[in-house]
Image (cartoon, rainbow, N blue to C red; front, side):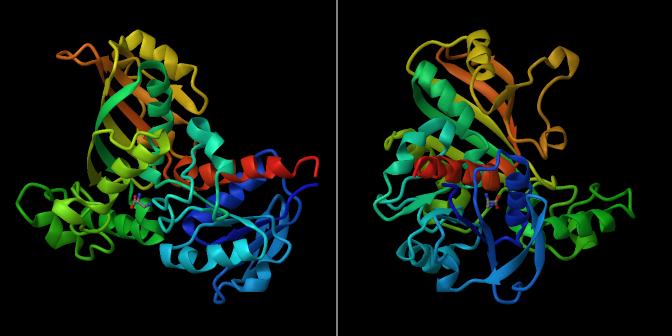
Length: 350
Ligand code: 2RA
């Protein structure tokens, strides 16, 4: 039978992308229920070409639901994912609430789909979008060469901070556009753009070496997520991972520079072949022709795009790479949908 799906957070930035994805991917679902906060209840949204009324989040909304996707803040998932499970659903949670819970698998279908069934709490977690923007490519290289360590710098889009982040960037760009002398004197951009919204410094005409909240030893939460989630997904609890996360004036699509060291010697050509044949990865790597991924070209697409593939000049067992991934699609909604589809297969034939 076709399982019943609930989309919790259907009206948010990720939820909106989720409805597009559910409407364009192969349809494996029976009824699709749209759920949001009481203030959004009653709205009518279109999914699979049909208008569906948004229901207010309440325990009974999960009655008869087989899979419940959560695209909501951590505290909402913390409270409601167990309720969905109690009512018989498998919860696929895109928040950070359960990602590091040892009884909750952290799944990227192209890397560790086999973990999907290992869900003692009935909850499966979707990784953070920054991790998701690189881990499909890194999983493929790990299988080929055996990963030994990672050094990562991210260049993260404003939409990682939701609609507020998008609006803040656009507002700042509009203000900055009026004065072509900006960026020539210390503090001139800061003075011109004013409102910083969710960012700790001006984003237009700037880069901000911070994403998330302050954690131990001066690290930002995003940097610890990249490190800890990569370790969990790859099943490598001691993998050395050094991450620095930077916010850049891009609307949507995260980029990352990766220095990856392996157990064996590598070649750029072989790495290109491995990546080109990996599900969910596209190689765009011909700098002589100006061919490499950029966020403005990758946004709205599903794959991880990889370019600038080079063997390290000082270490034959290391690679330098640049990659981009749409943080709202594969970084959130698409991977959540892919996990839900893996669960849906369990209902086939039932
Ligand atoms: C960010 N990865 O970009 C985080 C959450 N989406 O802000």
